[in-house]
Every structure is written in structure tokens, then in C-alpha cells.
Length: 504
Image 1 (cartoon, rainbow, N blue to C red):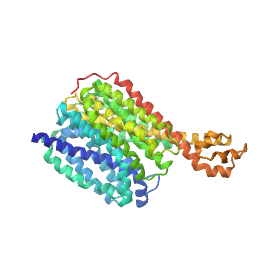
Image 2: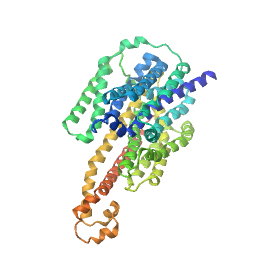
Image 3: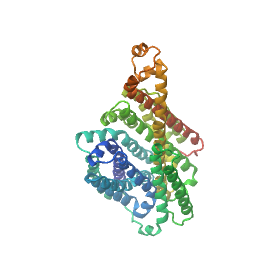
Image 4: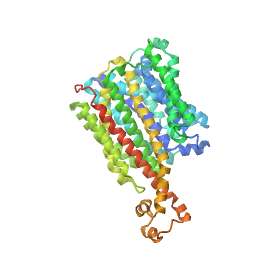
């Protein structure tokens, strides 16, 4: 009984560390303008605060298996969380943009291993009968952090200063790391594993993932067919190809890819990728719309987005109970269908959309998320041998991050590619006297009809420009919501090929 209590307590510490790592990305995002002013950073450079972290994180995630074999799960978590905490102090103490970026890279490298370490711990620490509960605890915190992040970040920035966005990690980081030393199972590190490190494969993997992340970030702004983006994508393909060839032939590969021979794991990874598109996409589209069109601040946006988090918490015990009794394939299909419906419900927004109109789409998405996460995680990892779990967990979580990165790139392409097109169409409709367009823009009907058949005066059109841009952005955002909904719905096709496995 004592050992069971200690295991759950240790797992809780791991979940706390994971929550901090995910929350860190979100709270910093809300305060980028504040940091830009404080450090006097050029507008076209400030996004590297997030990009540097995400690139380092995506490189670290697939290394979780190697590091677990080297250090053991216990010491990997303690080392990663300790390094993450030290890097957080470094970020807060930074007095220049360059030093902040350097510490953000360290933060990302440390934080990247925390998420897959937690999901591998589910299957390494607990018997099958407890794995559903553990997965739910980890899953709730993993998807709750992006939901509460905006309100936490907005409150900290408005109440204190941007330095506290990083300093809030210190106390929980120290507590969780020290507690984990005593609570997690003790195994001897395998220092001989270090001799098997394939530095060339590590470099190729890092190059491929970094080039992909930078290409996805810059593609919407520079154009997907521009020379720099095509060059980055070529580097990605080339480095990834050589990495795969080398890894598949290596006696001690840096990342074990053997799990991809399992159909359940492959389908679980595909579902994780699609979930990343929907999760990252919805958490991105809502604040972008509310800030750009409604002019809301971070605190207001965070308060609106709390709806999703509350519904997730309510649904968590229901998801656990159903996951134990129902076919994982049916739960997964229901979850992705419901999630797609919640995304599609947001594809009909207007420039006046606010809390009330966003309430029910968030409820539907919040109700679906645990069914999109819990059964696919078991489908991918629950039946693997212990020696496969750490590597497989890293790859499984990498798929979700890559789905998010690609999803955000597609969304930005729609937002900033289709937005100008919609603006031109709106102006043409106004010039042609279209009443419906005038009403959508927000022009009083009596004023618009009083002009007769005369074209809209250029001076008046200049005054209407912000309203036109708001409607154009809204229409582009609706197309982005619809695109993400369709992509999410396509995941249903893969569920039919998933193997049926007995419930726990």
C-alpha cells in the first residue's frame, strides 16, 4: 500500500513538471509584446522567443528513450526538471535578447523530455487496471495547460512583470524534483549506454527537425514556393532520409523505430498528429480572433477560454469509466467526430462573436478531447514491451507536436493568404451596393441605402477600412476553422484499421 501511494505521489510530481513545461509556452506567448518593449527587440525577431523553445523541444522529445535507458526514468525526470528550473531563472534574469534566446533553448531541451517521460511512466509504473486513470490525469493536465495559459500569463503580466512568467516555475520545480528523488522507483543508471550514442544521427535528426520547424514558421509569411522555404524543406527531407537510413541499419540506434512495425502504434501516432492539428489550432485561433477582431486583452481571452478546461475536468472521470468498458475504437471515433463537430461550430463566426457564441463550441470540444487522447494513447503504447515504451512515447508525443506545427502553418497560410482576398471581395461588394455585405461589415442600413447608386466615397471607404479588415479576417478564420474540422474528421477513416484489443 505504501509503495502504491509513493508511486502515485511520484507520478503526480512528474505530471506537475509536465504541466509547468506546457504552461510555460502559453504564458510567455501572451506577454511577447511586453518582453519586446522591455528588451528593445525588433518586431520581426521577437517570435524567436517561442520558436527557439519549440525547436529545442521538438529535438529533445524523441531523445526521451535514449535518455531513459541512460539515466533511468527517475533521474531523467529529476535532471530535466532541475535544468528546466535553472533555465527559467536564467530567462527571468536575462537583460538582453540574445541571453533570453539562449536560456529558452536550454528550457526547451529540458522541457521536451518531460511530456513523453510522463506518458511512458503511465505504462511503466502502473498495472493495466490503473493505466486509464493515470493517462487521464496526465492527459487532463496536458490539455488544460494551454487553456489556462492565457489567463495566467495575462494576470501575471498585468499584476507583476514579465520576469514572473519564468519565476513561477522555480518553487514547483524544486519541490517536484526533490520529491521525485524519494518517490520514484530506483534503478541504476546505465552509463554504458552513452558509448552507443550515434552523434551523427543525433545531428541529422536535430537538423531535420529544426529546418522543418523554421520552414513551417516562416512559410506563411515568405511564401511556400520562395527559395528560403524550399531550401529548408529540402534540408529537412535530405537530413531525415539519411537519418532514417542510418538509424534503421545501426546496431544501437539513437531512436528505436521498431514500434512502427505495430499497426496499433502507427494508427495511434496518426491520431496523435491529427489531434495536434486540432488542439494547437483551436488554442491558437481563438485568441488571435479575439485580439485582432474584438480587441480583447490576454486576461479577457483567458477567461473565455476557461470553458474548455472546465468541461475537460468534468468529462475526465466519465472518460475513464467508459474507456474501461467500451471498445477503444468506438470511443476514439466518437471523440474525433465530436471534436470535429466542435471545430466546425466555430466556422460561422462574425466580427461580433464573443463569449456567448464561443461557449457551446468550446463545450463540445472540451467534452471530446479526453476521448481523442485517452483511447489512442492506450492504442499506441498500452500493449508494447517495457523496453519499447520510452522510445515509443517520445515518437507518439512528437507526432502531436508536429501536427500542431503543421496545423499552425496551414492556419497562418489561410489567415494571411485568404484575408486580403476577402478584403478585396468585400470592397467590391460595397461598391456594387450589396446590402448584405454592408450589414456584415456593420454599416447602418439607412446610411448605406441613402447613398443610392453612387460608388462609396474614397474618404468613407478609408474610414470603413478597419471594419472591412475585421470582416475579412473573420471570414478567413472561419475557413481555417472549417479546414481544421475537415482534417480532424479524416482521422475517423484510420480508426477502422486499428486492431481490437481487450479492455483493461
